Image 1 (cartoon, rainbow, N blue to C red):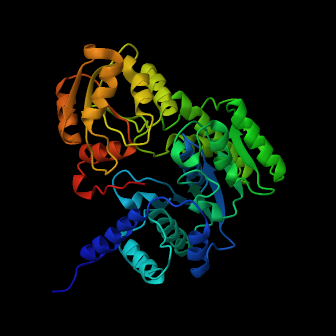
Image 2: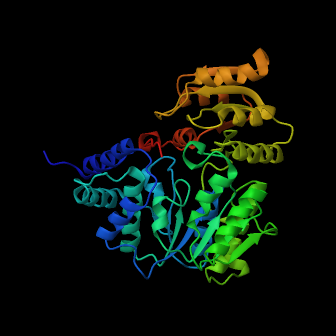
Image 3: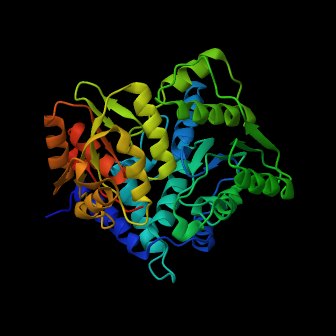
Length: 414
């Protein structure tokens, strides 16, 4: 019996997911080799490169939406996906298709089958994306770094503009134990002579960015005033800063700004799971996975629902400052619903319960659930507002349930 296209796609993408076993390998050698074999990147393609701890995905989404409003079919590469791998690679017209994934992955599989070391999941995914952008003839491409910046696979390209969003403590086991070390990794995307745009940051972060820009002769612009007077498609005060960074980069890249372009681009941005509200179901999704993101979520919740608390469906992965995230959100927690979700890095809900009980005692209301589906159902049955947060992997899983797309959900660890 002939193998169907769907089976072929499943086989190809399962192989790609299997390369997650190679872990996260910082360094540019494998990516340079992959792109070299593929004769990429194209000299005529132009890139905007975005790094940071929080907000980089939102900045990419705003920027991509502005380009679309300006009539430019730009490519965009982001991670992780929420429901399906296809979300990572797209342009203004569409996402990469199953058939394109199948053919692209099979070509990569053949090309690197004897390589030592073997390319990682992220390196291969980036190579797949770059090949797709070539075939789609995208003049512009927006690239979000995966982890860090200096040694991130995406750092092999030469951008027209670089953006560094808010930097805070995250991934310390890989990027460094303090803000200075982490900022050095993020600032690694700054290229000689290429304009770099950032916003006001902690003093030690600003020092690293300013020093790196000066050493490399990169013009540095610091956004100090948030954008006003426009309706944004993403909710929250922090999104004003992300939109402002995107507009500054849009201008620096040579795009002409007009009121219609700004109005449409900023209002029609689509970036799920960033304070995404399903009003009728009284459910809000937000992938706040570190303390700074949790602070932004707290402020945004209090702005949207003053005086109201939430039944919080919460799950997290290991190697995160989960304790501080939960302590930050405790003021708006009416009841915690701790849950496991589909990730090998998922923390057992019993461990999450211990963290919150050890700090606040038995007065904290909580439930433990064996699945996100059960946690969501019980939380919604309360009749109160529900907030799903703690990990983008959990939020993606719940989003697939709310959209009726459970059958499409594909878990990922990076």
